[in-house]
Image (cartoon, rainbow, N blue to C red; front, side):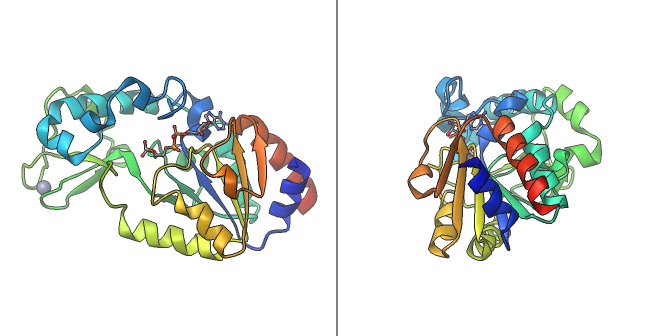
Amino acid sequence: MIEEAARLIARSRFAIAFTGAGISAESGVPTFRGSGGLWRQYRAEELATPEAFRRNPRLVWEFYRWRMNLIRKAKPNRAHYALAELEKMGVLKAVITQNVDDLHREAGTENLIELHGNIFRVRCPSCGYGEDLKKSGRLEEFLAGKSLPRCPDCGSLLRPDVVWFGEALPEDAMNRAFGLAERADVCLVIGTSGVVYPAAYIPRIVKESRGIVIEINTGESGITPVADIFLRGRAGEVMERLVRMIRRLVK
Ligand code: APR
Ligand code: ZN
């Protein structure tokens, strides 16, 4: 199956990748629903909804500062680097991710669509002010802070620039992602449970446009029923083997 997957990707006209928390598991970033997953330990409705933020912004910021601290220490793994390499080879046209951990960017992926935002960005719901704390160099000071972060322009409470449950996806990102899915003849789906919509429509849109879905996961997921090829295994190991085969095929 992995040889067949390598052939399909190497010969593809417009291949894309769609990723979830499982691709970052080997980087030490907890997933959401797997064993030890965040939503197994914590109640999402108390930490990742606009209502929770209105009710108790201090608790929500404590949770996000904890996650930011954990994720900033994480490094991209072989799967992230393999996707960046496939893009440089011209084989992969884009990566659509549900992850907010910035690891695809750190691995060198250029055409990246973050459907659920980025945990190192903050924004002001009142005046629209936005800041990438990595780019502004204020991440350390921000994480060291105990007080609630305020907007430098209008003084309102800043929030993490991520998509919470019950919120719409950023329109531009969603339209770009759906457009890519319609064009794709191959979609590599890596490490997602495929149960969160509208993101989980991506592989289905590829199928409806007669594209091929290749899934990599340690177990079956909500995507497996629509996958043409299912490669069971850890993303880092499988992607390393896959990219080695593709290198030989495109030489
Ligand atoms: N390699 C490949 N797959 C893995 C690995 C690994 N090393 N480890 C775990 N997985 C798989 C699990 O089997 C599971 O199917 O990754 C998937 C992770 O699923 P979730 O934890 O549900 O994460 P995800 O699908 O990204 O969640 C979607 O839900 O909580 C919201 O906004 C959040 O973006 C997130 C969305
Ligand atoms: Zn503001």
